[in-house]
Length: 109
Image 1 (cartoon, rainbow, N blue to C red):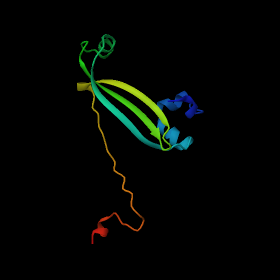
Image 2 (cartoon, rainbow, N blue to C red):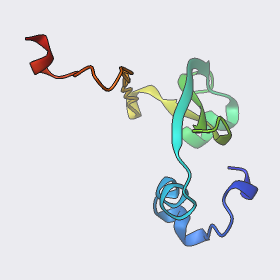
Image 3 (cartoon, one colour):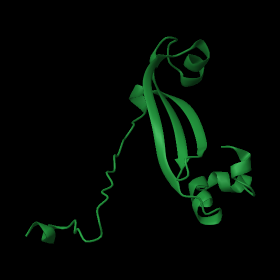
Image 4 (cartoon, one colour):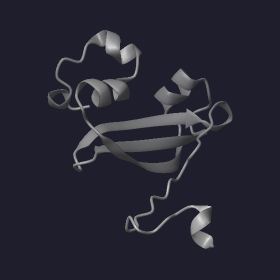
């Protein structure tokens, strides 16, 4: 996270929700997270730290978070042992329609 985007951030807030701090204290609106998921082989160091054999398959998750003005505010890369982790994905579709159009069951009549 670029430190100039999060003035006043305290270490204690890192143990809570940084996203809530961005939203509630700084007034930022988080708009999206872009993910790249790929299979990679564990390096010697990763294998030692993760207690797997070197070359074992890992899932790498690369993530960039964006504010509503397009500013990237977070970048992360994690590597995960497949049988010890689970990735879940939710896709939300936003519908844009004129205010005169009702998007509920009543509009089907």
